[in-house]
Image (cartoon, rainbow, N blue to C red; front, side):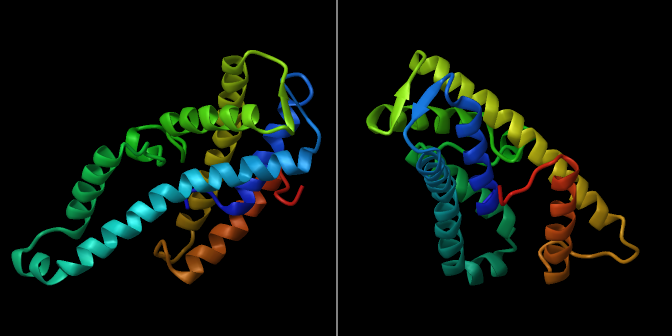
Length: 195
């Protein structure tokens, strides 16, 4: 998943905090944050499942690709793009669409529409503004929070690259260092994922 579950949980709590009571009213901030968190996770898992499906398809043709000298990355990209357009999936990865954040602007907009629809269906919420104004507030808050997360991630990656030895991304050592540096950088911004 593009964002860790901890960050999604933090993002959800911050969205509820920033929008209540001026934009929405809720009977329980915790259940509201949980609902938002679940919605974001489900949206991000759509692309994860699609990636798994593409990997499965490519594994069936690995021998052919090796024999013909076809690039795995190129085929992955082509098949994924085809499936995305056929299924009308909105790309989650911002870097794939030229955005500098982990989530694309399109995905943030899509999530905001689904979030407002969920607010309107649920009895736990009451919108205090026009639904589009609520949606725009969600987009603005998510964009700000994801901008900070991008800075944190970039700083953590820079620290890893500055090590004396080269540490390949995806290795256990890289993952451990990234988690540690990521947590350190979050603290510099005053962000505690547990709260």
